Image 1: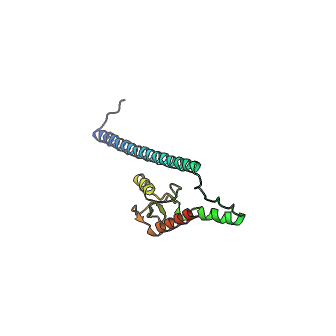
Image 2 (image 1 turned 90 degrees about the vertical axis):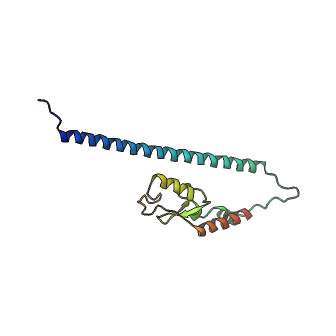
Image 3 (image 1 turned 180 degrees about the vertical axis):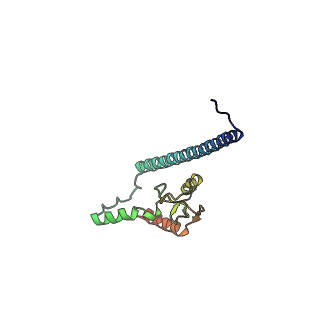
Length: 160
């Protein structure tokens, strides 16, 4: 005995097909967003690699100025203090990029992030990178105090 499609059955089949199409479209948009995010991160990593290679070449090519004295070797305690002074404060490190922030912003979760990194994150997600909880507010706001703290640290580390 064959089952005949009734009118409501064909509507149900059509509705399920439309639902399947919308889910497929959402998955394709998500995958495209993830590919774009991965590509942008790859570009950022490549830029960072180039920057570090330039710094390494400059350090390898560096020669003291004529008549300049070589610095005295530091004692154990002062070397340790110098290392701590050169180490960036933990608040200055972006939790997403793990680098010193240049343009720190405050996100809806109350944590500070590098502007570009958190904007890329929020372009494809609406959760906190640190807690994983949904963010009620996905706006970001400049963190002037932290920017000032980073600049002061940079000036101190350059002068040592």
